[in-house]
Length: 187
Image (tube, rainbow, N blue to C red; front, top):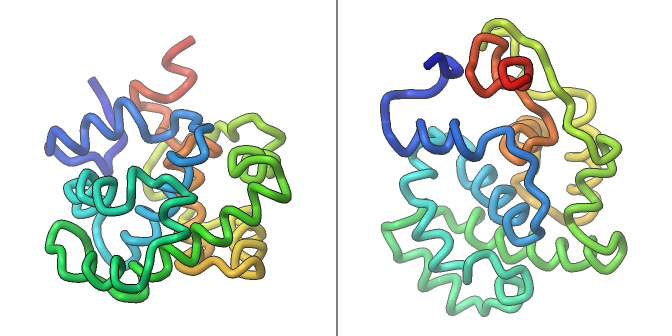
């Protein structure tokens, strides 16, 4: 079975690639989770984040946006002591900041799902890259979304992070054409 070249032999990575990456995701708490994890990954490898994902879910109330938005400074300080996540103060406090900004988006747009998916007319962009090195790290669309999020008070949402987020939640399908997960292979 051929997979995208970025997938290692780690079973966690294989599972993520085969069952999550590029699948359209629409639940607000899951979108918030992926936005948080992509921001946590900045400067690190994705497998590092995947291995800590369960701890993030435990510490951040399964990414219940309301609960994360109302976390106290003392709760966030306690999280900073937990070796089960990336202990970066800006990223930890940024998670609460992003939850607060997310609540405003939900109030304005009806859902986080609608906010993000409207950028692609609620249909995934299916790319046909043959090789991994052809896949961009950011696009004009990820830059546009990033600018809007930053204007709304989000942090750790630069154009590269947002493009990785778009790939992760299936707004963009960047499985290479030789990968068994590319939509052309599943027709």
